[in-house]
Image (cartoon, rainbow, N blue to C red; front, side, top):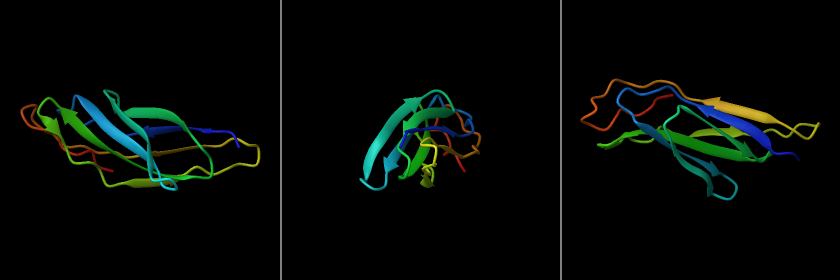
Length: 106
């Protein structure tokens, strides 16, 4: 099976300078992505036939919001040997730069 390209997206949160997110392989319970980014999306390559969990939180110099509820997705294996998948969350609330930003919602 060929690995699958996956793109995760979420909406910007007012007051956030960056986003902290992770992707966990549910079979091994191993964190396969633990990343911070200034963007509101992230692309990676994952293994077909596995189920993953991901969530994200918004951060600034004052701290971070709570993580979103975990979102689960499975990369389906295709007969041609390649597959792709994606999932997204959206939302976000206003927040002052003097306090941690609001949690991204989805």
